[in-house]
Image (cartoon, rainbow, N blue to C red):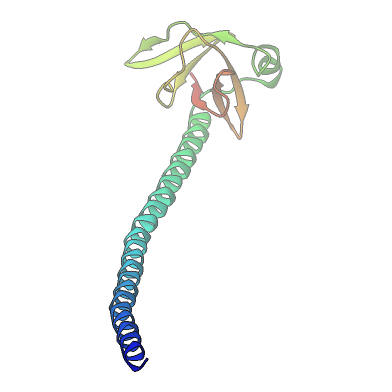
Length: 161
């Protein structure tokens, strides 16, 4: 019986002795995995911050560009003609759509004529707009703009020549 007890104790000791390194190895692997996750999170953080910064810069640039176009429209209106209110209501606005077809180039500048007035462009023709699209002229915030009902939210600064 003593021999069985000694053998049992020896087997138990060997089992526990073998289990301790396995446990220690698992603990070490978990620590390494945790450290890897932490490093990965730290590496992603600057990338996320850079992306957020780039988005903020893009929004700022769009805002500045929009403000610049508004200023151009106000300057254009003060330097060029104005359509009397009665003529404007009779020929212009959302309910008076027309097609430009092809602008005329005069002194290197594109122009079009509608409603008895010549208009010049103060900014480039928007991507996606066609000269065969229906458009209309409206007066907003002290300036004239060309709108395309097929592309809401986009407007082109124009001047009365």
